[in-house]
Structure formats: structure tokens, C-alpha cells
Image (cartoon, rainbow, N blue to C red; front, side, top):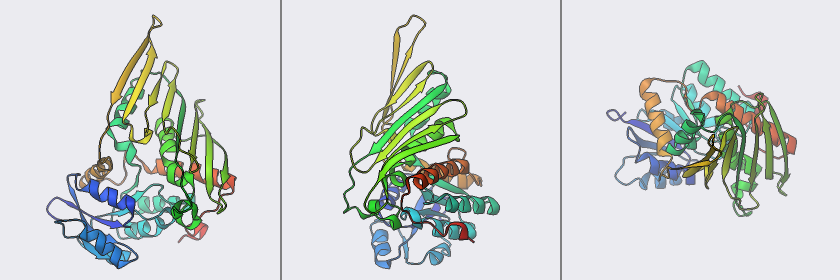
Length: 338
């Protein structure tokens, strides 16, 4: 470590790694110490782009994990490639932030969770929208009882992904709309309502066998329901709304960034009351990084905001949906995991 700063080791150099690296420069308490890619040249270019910072480049995860300047690991590879480096980091006792979804299968997610719990090492899924100021404000409104008991959640997310965007269409890269886009609408419903008791799904597949469009209906023991959808065939409104027995909340697009939401309720006199909340921010990933910094500094081994149970619930919903759709996907050794 450099003073009180936490040294990050990034695994992966793609677009999300670039985004999070930029956010890290704005998140007090941490710095990029190392980066790893299967191609050393890519890691070296990624490191060189961090002007004014001394960043080590590796083409081997184990070598990066042995670097004493790396205190925390961020895994930013494609979904099916999350498991191996995250597991390696946990085995050597280094906290891990794993890009969402945590893995491409319930078995692999469960394996990481069990290992983290056994070793007492911090493992956090990078569900970054949970840490945004807008999300915090939204949950405060819901928690205040302003709209009453939450009975329904609706959210959609989608945009056209041509075949030239290979990672959306290749099963070996975690292709499909649900694993890539689903963490946002499903994550919102789980955050508000907890573990669902029922999952129903319909959808369609691409010629490569991955899910093209997915419509989910989730149910909870309380009687609450959620209608959620993802697509990589069309551009959707990408909005969300939350229904309570005393009012409702509409979240503007893109809903996962929670830039603005409107609360509508009715008073005893029947008059409608409207409250508008605006919380748009730039570089929103910095909030999850700051959260990890705080957890590491306090010696915590689980996030209270995105607990491991949330990651298991998310993986379970995806597992049920993709299995029922018959979607092709890469599995990380499945039941043969060590």
C-alpha cells in the first residue's frame, strides 16, 4: 500500500475496465497499482494511459496477485471469465470486486460465495447502481412509507446489438441480453423486495443460441410481483416504476443511473401530490469503489448494501430463466468445481 491508499489490481482491459479506472481517479482512498490482460501489450497500453501513475502490467493473474502493491482485485473480463481470477484472488486472501453478473452460472457464483465465507475475504459484486445518490434517495422514499407497501416493480432495458458486437452473440463470451442487461432491472426488484418465491420467463433466442429478448415475471410471498424485460433487438424506454398501495414512483431513463424520479401520491382530500427528485451524477462507478475502500479499511468481509445473498439471488433468477429458455451459454466447470 502507498500510505493509506488501497492499491487496485485490474483483471481485464475492456470498456468497463476503462470506465472504472477513470472513476477510480475520483474515488479517494485508492489508486490503480497493476493491470493484467492475456495479452501483455494490452496491459501495457492500459497502464500507459494512466498518465502520472506508476502502474505495473502483467499477462498472468497469479503474478499480479503476488505483487505486494495490489491490495484489492477488480475483475472486469467477460462474464464466463470472472470465476477463475476471482477465485484465485480469494484463495490468496485478497478482497475482490467482481463485475456483474458475478459469474455466468449459479454453480460458479455459489462457489465464489462459499470460498469467500470460508476464507473470511471480502467479495462484492459490482452492482454499482446500488451506491448512486439517486438509488439511496429512492430507497429512502420507499422506506419512509410514502407510497405504502411495494406491490409491483416494472423495468425494461434494451438496445439493438448487431452481430458485429461479438460479446453479445457469442455464448463463450457470456452473450445474450439477460446476463449483460438483466442485472439492472432484476437487481432493482431484488433490492426492493428481496428473494423471490417464483420466476416465470418467456423470450426468444438468436441463431447463435443466446437469449435475444427476455420477459420475466417474478413473485414474492408478500404477493408483490415484478414485470421485467431485456432485449438486444430494440431500443426500449429504459424506465422503471414502482407501485405501492398509497402511490407510485417513476424513474426516468436510464433508470439504472437514477438521474431523476417522480413520486406521486394522493392525500386524504383526493388531491395528487407530486415530488420530483433529481440526482444525476457523472462517473457513478466511483461510489462502489469508495464503498469498497471503506469496507477494506474497516476489515469487513461482506457489503451490507450488496450482500452475498443478493448475488446468489441474482444468479438463481438468471439460472432459472436461461435454463427454461434453453439458451446456450458458457459454464465455468459447473459441478466439477474444486
